[in-house]
Length: 198
Image 1 (tube, rainbow, N blue to C red):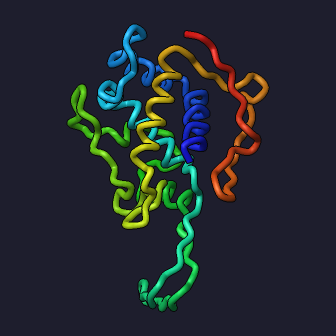
Image 2 (cartoon, rainbow, N blue to C red):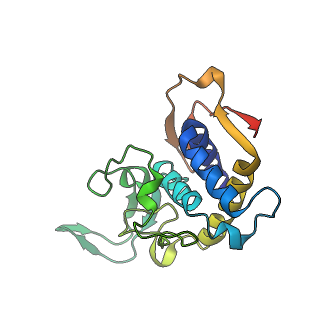
């Protein structure tokens, strides 16, 4: 899932150059090119974190969660027998207008708390947000590697953005991308980017 998360983070960086610039400024503020990018510095990068949460919302690495219930359940008047296969459509849940303002817009600011201050992260999502944000599942069977994956992705994107700029390849500037999901989410057609030194 980290590779899918990074793939779509790079896609979003290329697709939204103004957001990419804000992330670059956030990274440079806390980890200028002369210093190493440490986790202590990463922890202060509010906008980077907000961007990565938004990338997870809009482009969830796993588009569908499948579970089997052990016991009989009753959900809104519907009886669900034991051992029923249940599907959670993560992609649809993350874009549902009942739960998200302007759900089709890519807006990292939705993850920033209004009172966040320099060096203070927006409230960390526990993987749920009322079970409307579940990129790594939720509850007792959520992904045990979620925090490590988050740290790894923050480090990769911060390192990339600090010294490089990504753009959509000229051959794809007018291409409409769609998402497909079997096990992990993929863009169709595959995204091509151009990487330039800052």
